[in-house]
Length: 346
Image (cartoon, rainbow, N blue to C red; front, top):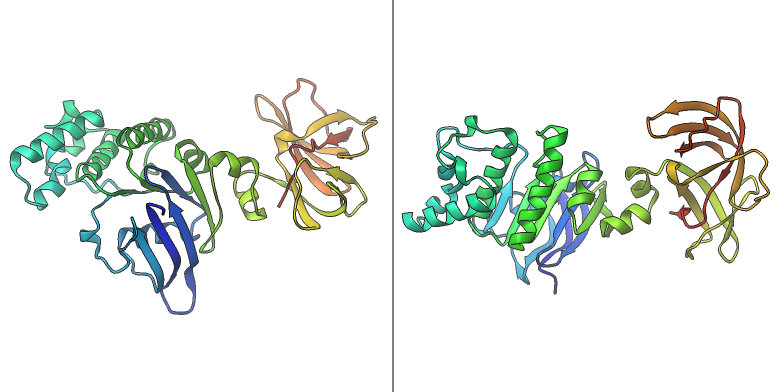
């Protein structure tokens, strides 16, 4: 049995349009699971169902087998970290962190002990007597994290907690969150629309689209083997073309070009996709016939470490990112080699 289970969750605000559509998700104890997707996909609604801020129209939410669907938010013992830090400006850092314990009427000596221990864990012990306005954005975010963790929650919920930080600080903070989460072994749900942030911090990722989970797997599997065209597009695949099975693991494109793939697929009709950086750019004269397309360079863009080319082919425009020092110019005739181990069918 999983530690956390969402079973056939449906949420509709008007009774007609479903925000979540029979959503199912299972999370093992100690995992950090991210909900990834564009705005409006349902990831924050899913988090609010878990938190108890929204009661679903149908379905059940369970923790350790206990049905918490109708349990109010203040009785769930979950820690939450929001996009805005939501710190009390008139309270010191240690008072902010200990606020939840104070509400529970725990003894002062116990509160002090737990707060100082958590400030040590989050690297804030030297700032205990300061006020939020005296801290940086990253430090304030760690205060919010410490406040959520000090109550020893069963589940830690993080709703885009790094979106208000600058790029460099976001990288540092996602590492800090992962280290603290692993140290404490707390089961966590992290909401983000940032693919890199999500993949760097997660044990498992649920990619969401229009209220359903299109793929739930490890970051490595999702990055290398997206299951659907939506997932592929969302995580950086940019070249798509129709393919039809003709023999074993060989597929034909509409123009008759043949492509082999390393993996066996169930359907006879698929959409082939490949990342721009996985395509090899060759001179026009190529003896290779399978997994090769003739093309003409239309646009060249310098990216620093590589060039990006927009190449016109019989299958339409294909983007290629090439790291070689030789730069092709617009109008040059080339061949594109699509490695069978890099060709993904969705």
